[in-house]
Length: 71
Image (cartoon, rainbow, N blue to C red; front, side, top):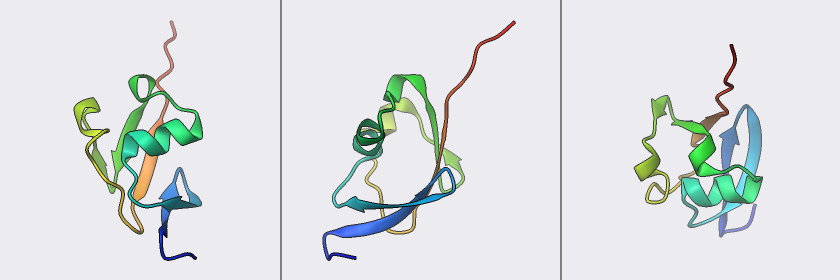
């Protein structure tokens, strides 16, 4: 681990990210579009308006859910 990095868990996988990093920034680096996913951080669903301003912290747990339409 480098001093400018910290660990988070995203969808059950350990990830190392550079700080500072917003939730929206993390989504972008992973190839997800913030407008097309639902994000739960440490058990709380984030509003889309929070994604760009919420900074990730060490040991955060994210669940990124891609809603699927069907019928």
